[in-house]
Image (tube, rainbow, N blue to C red):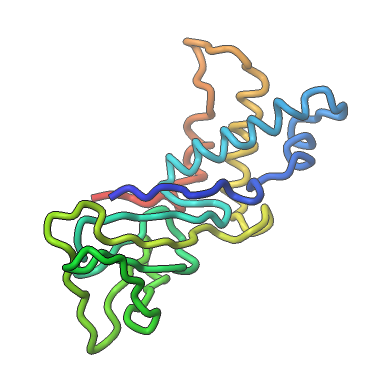
Length: 189
């Protein structure tokens, strides 16, 4: 039940200018490297937190309707579509009024609207239910919480300073720096 990112975020949680200011880099020679480090740090952060930083489209596929559909990689912002293969094998899009998004839970849930039940899906069909949704804090770097951005800056600084693998020091900061993320982590059972 892992969703797939269907497109890259339109922006990164840090701008190149923010990263260069943190690194105290004033020349443009390393802009390509620093831009790549921003993306790598974002991906590592999202993996550690199990959450999306910048608004990104996701697709979740399930074999059948559960009681409530959990939308991983919060915070969920919007559901674009909820589709399923009916008993005859026809792909059907559920009307938006037939389900409700609980965006306050993290991860968010989709549940049938009051008085509505989930429909039956085609027997034996894998990925019979498909949810297209958007998750993230927002569309710009300014929408990402400060402690997460600080962790990203520390991780970028560490990777920039140590461009080769070292057995003595990890590629991303530990201890205090990782503690900056704890408030935002999605803890699994």
